[in-house]
Image (tube, rainbow, N blue to C red; front, side):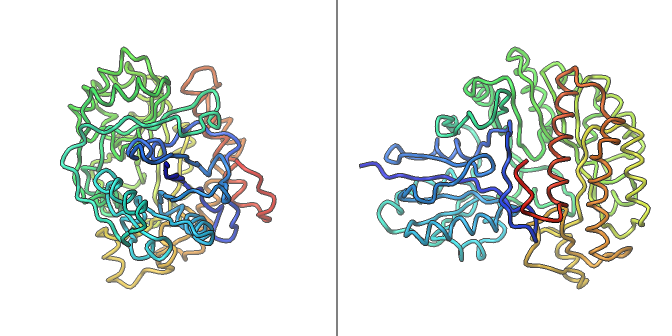
Length: 443
């Protein structure tokens, strides 16, 4: 008789003070972790999955095993989900980035944790679970190669939940080659940067059966020659795709021309700051502020939608940075922007430096409420002032007045994508700042 496993990607709570589970009325992005873990699962197991962001968890479904994939932002909700299944006598295993960085904490909330990449340990964990012999900790060695990964099993995902324009998450590499002081991406899974064989990526694109693709790589352009070859191979597929890479690649005319020809629809970039001294402080000197305007102009000219990530709270900033950033965004008619509070992530050089300087606060909540909670004693404002300023930036940038000034008419795929993201972020911003959490009815 087959054993039954339920694989869950939990949602998150709306904010630290509003423990409403975030639900999306509609969402186009199909997650990768659920169908990929299903593909790794031996045939002796019957697999079902839940993406809690778009569907409810049936706590009475009585699987033999529950597996939860955790990012830190989802951790509190994930722990509550695990507790509910354990209360029913069902064992729970956990893995994912949060478990990598906080294994001791995660282990307190489940029966077993998997630290590292799933491929080397997944089958062992399931076999032990089937035999009632789960160990508390499974540690995976880093895989030297990403060749031969299985094709995701999309049949375990309720694809109807993602609408007519569903976008499938893909992965063409793991790791990040950069050395930004604040970022934990380069530490996850032991560091290093590995790429998948291009024919296997192309096969996976064909396998999903969609023309809409999102590459969730930490740095899609981390190995230029490989990315160029992949984009060339994507041209015959006529897909529309999105990804994240560093801003300096947008100054590479050959690279960007090929990206546009291969179907690049939306690009996310971490430009982080409009202050050159701040970029030096975070060891991101390869971002050139004096090139931002030209880079963004090139993206508009090529018909590519884009979003920019910013981080606030650096020592050499002043309170004027908030208004000057908004003015930059309005002047450049930036389609989408995300505003983050500088957060010291465990294991980074920045985390160690802040600990040594005694500037860390609210350690128990680090990474769980990005953009909502400040974890540092700052040089130019209080933590509470920083939190208020970030919320004000979201409210101003995603006001209808700002949206109508910045965005062109939604008559091209790129412009439509920008409008969809603005409306979605506006709803999320309004929900997060609502005085009464019970008024939140989904995004």
